[in-house]
Image 1 (spheres, rainbow, N blue to C red):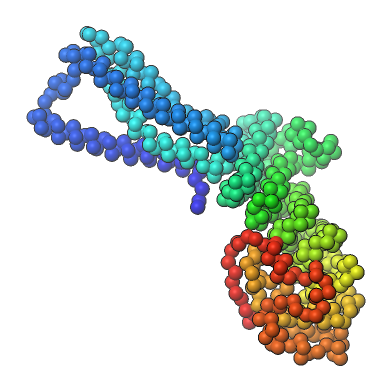
Image 2: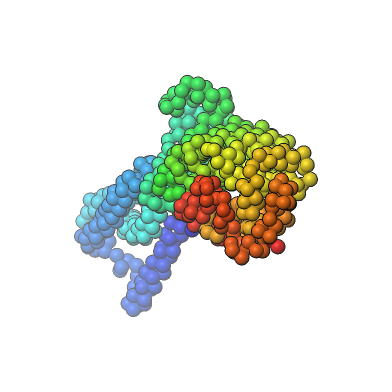
Length: 564
């Protein structure tokens, strides 16, 4: 459901008042008209107690005073209960937001003044003195109070919607940034305000995870991305003073870290991305399905920064991705690794135009694949291998300068892991070899063949058999990626078979045993990892059990796509 902005709430409030006012005006006017007609349209003077019975005017003001008091007491009771409770649930900043809102201040002020005005009018009425205008204002003011009551009640309730709170915090940050860029706000004061507002958004997201409120968490994470986007538009107009921060802004950081932030002018991005890291850590435990949202936001921040040629922010986002991977490996969260590596490989493909970033990300894939090996996280290690292979393909298709370096990073992944051959890495390298053969990259293909030549023939045959058995692109369970990452099209499978025959030798590769159609009868086109060699390495393949335990979320639809 689309979230309401503060302007939309104000518009709805105004429309509600107008609608009720028109409705009551028509109703009361018709009622008054029929009563006048019933009595022969008497003069207006005969309808007033003025000068005839002033005491009756005073008596009439008594229910007016009670009406004002009732309206005001209901408003204060609602606000006094709802605001503190909601602030405790989401963020203490809500109280300040409520008190600073113009509609809230206007309604409460008018209610208090109206109640006091009735008392004043009652006081000045005398036996020979009637304050006609004050009397009219009191009566019609009481009616207006009841007209406002219902629209204002809905306004307050919607004001407390956490989505609205997030949007207001976001708008405050962007308006403050614009004011600083235009020279209307002091940078040091604005820095403190923006840091506090960012902390409040992070608090809302973290508390939303604690309550399993995924929609609010999603909106909060997305708001962080929108803030960075808005900041990117005004950042070039910021003065030098804006980019200087001190110990009080980053209490836990070293002097060198703060000095680096000042040099690279990334203090605001650091605060935003640190909120993302905190949200990620909570999502690991409370809402793993939101990992994809968090990592997607980090990737978009990096891509948009690269378009603005803000290299320091891109580097910062890469460091955040590395932090995400480290957290996933340390906590053995396979689902998180599944999402993080996917977004990381997407980022690598989008940054292939810059060879320095592409090489750096490729190197980090190798670092964390080897770390996963050391931590015995075979699923993550194998996943990194296939995703890095995808990055290599993307680089060559884009004719990127860093393509050969990425291939070298990929081939640096050891095929033998903990004394055993890694079937998944062999399969990833077979897929890469078939791709290079398709593209006519003979020199690069020779490097992959040289690497695969060290794999025992039985293991190589099993890997090729496994790949050619996978007929269907869609994975057989519901995952974020939807496709089987080991699937290849028919042309690629034929090349994989040919490469295996070349590397193993026709005498060792049994074509009948590895025939696609014969194998399909046993595996239903999915490749169920049933070859005789996989059982020797319980951690060597991306098997169905690993996917099942690592992917509890259901995002998007699986589209069955048969090749051809």
